[in-house]
Length: 212
Image 1 (cartoon, rainbow, N blue to C red):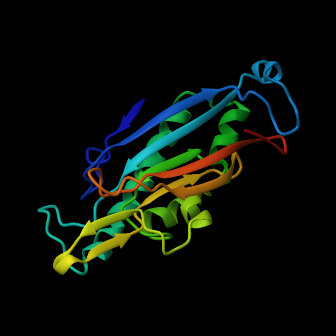
Image 2 (cartoon, rainbow, N blue to C red):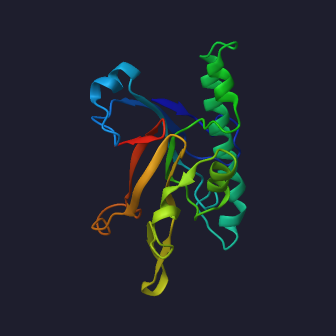
Image 3 (tube, rainbow, N blue to C red):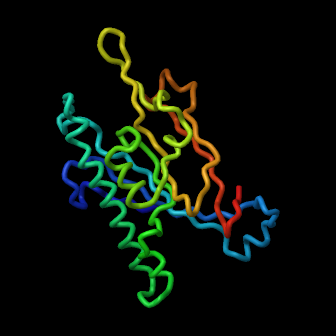
């Protein structure tokens, strides 16, 4: 696991670091009927996964105003940009500059991360998510599968009301993964976090086929 300390990387207003890890596994079988032994010969599947907790829509002193969500959006976008920059530097530092592997990594269509998930502290298509989807080529599984009225965050407010927002997302690289479904889990509303768990299931895309 690699810790990308976004506040120390110079992202003004950033609060939390990001965690990045490599996940390697061998699918038991593929939809084309390929067996585990064939995957072992290929070296299995390698994914780069990041967990993020982007800048909350609050002032650094904990206060919040009607404009705070908008004014902190640029911080969340900068956090995503810095995360991708740090990952790019880390990947390129381990690749031979003359190799075809580096040329593939530097391609604008090649995603640096296969999954970026966590508390984005923003709704579908906003600042950080917009950059991931439009510039890095990732897709938001929550926006793809979960109706807009389904929130992932609940916060008790004045006079018995509850604020409901979609702040938690799972984004993925569609050239590597096919999202089979995504949902917000129920049963965690009381005595736990103010955020609801978001669960997504993926298949790994391999030469036109999918691996569960």
